[in-house]
Amino acid sequence: MKLSIIVLLVISSALLYGYQQEFLNLTSVSELQDKESEFTISHRFLGSVEDEPLDTFFGMDIGANVGIAYRYSVYQLFEAKAEYSSGKKEYSVGVSRQILLFEDYIKGQINVDYFSFKEVSIEDRRNNFYYQIALQSTPIFDRIMLNLNAGFDGYYERLTSGIGLGVKVLDNLTILTEYFPTLDRDSADERIAKYLGEDDSFAIGVKLDTYGHQFIFQLSNSDALNSRRASLGTNDGSDLKFGFKLQRRFQ
Image (cartoon, rainbow, N blue to C red; front, top):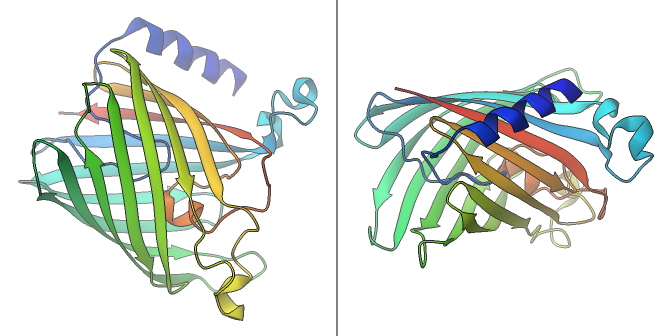
């Protein structure tokens, strides 16, 4: 794993020109063209970067929530996708459709996913649907991007939300921040409340653009890989965990 991080850094510094404004955990509005696809590998390490950093290599030796994902642009803004994450042995398949709003200012996308996962110490799998809308601004002053996710989790029967800000500091380097408020922490019924973390999830990171690749590195108080999971909150307070995401576009 240590060698993999070094290789990613070397490769990312040698290439230029990204293909999409991706965020850390939020769903971004797709910019894939017809018949293009994307493969993603994600890691969210479980150890804190501050807890015996030399012995645990900044929390990377304690384990990780690992994810892989693939999506394909079928035809005219319509996409199909499949994902897996190791944290709860979660599988999901879904479709998305871009929506045209004020094209010069904002882009939108509707997502519908079917997901299945296993809770800790429960043998049977849990499954349901997740409905989401993602809104993303076009670059303001060619530098600033805003992202908003809002959705409904059919299993936990709750609304989800997340907001993000991206600031491009160089042509191939963007600083990203995200925040996921758990709005129903005090109002959720007992069945749902036990799954909600005591603190809201947040993340900060950088995105390195390359030709056909994107390398994203982050620090977060959650090991979630997407906005649905991040919106459940975390019990790790302000303890930061390292994570990364590698994306490759295929034409």
